[in-house]
Image (cartoon, rainbow, N blue to C red; front, side):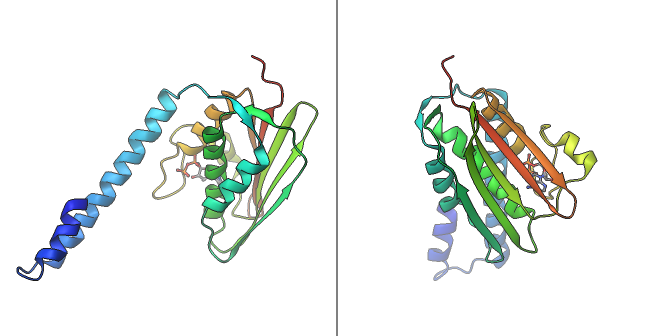
Length: 197
Ligand code: ADP
C-alpha cells in the first residue's frame, strides 16, 4: 500500500486514477495497521517478554512519556514530581504503561479537562498517579476494567489495561483505579523500591 500510494500520484499525469481507488487504498492501509495492532497486543498479552531491569529514574520516564503524548488544546497536563530514589525497572515496559494511562485519560476528556501526573515515594514503593477530570467509570465497568477485551470505545481493543496490569505485576508492582462518574478517574501505579528477586 505504501508503494502504491506513492506510485499512483506519479502515474496520475498520464492515466487518470479514480478517486475511489485512492480511497480504497487508504482503507486497506488503515485496516492493515489496525490488524497489526491487534496481533501485537494479543501477542504481548499472551507471551510478554521478561522485564529487563535497569536502574531507572521514574520521574524521567514520566517526563519522556508526557513529551510523547499528544493532547488537544483543551486538555491541560500538569506534573507534580516528588523526590524519588532510582529503582530497577524495564524502562520500555513502564513507559508503555504510562503512555497507555495518559492516552486513556486524554480520551476520557473529550470536552477538555486536566490530567495531573504525580509521583511520590512511600515506605516501600514509588507511586505514580494519573488523575483526570474526565467522564469517570461506572461501578459496573470498574469491575471489568483490567479484563482483556473490555472496551467502551468504538475503535477500542480493550487490551491496554490488561497489558498494563501484566507489565506492572511482572515488576512486582500493582496498579489500581478509583473513579467517580462524571468527575474523573485516578490510576495509581506502585513499583517496589527493592527488587532483589
Ligand atoms: P481501550 O482503550 O482499547 O478501550 P483499555 O484497556 O485501555 O482499552 O481501557 C478499557 C476501558 O476502560 C476503556 O474503553 C474505557 O471505558 C475505560 N477507561 C480506561 N481509562 C479510563 C479513564 N481514564 N477514564 C475513563 N474511562 C477509562
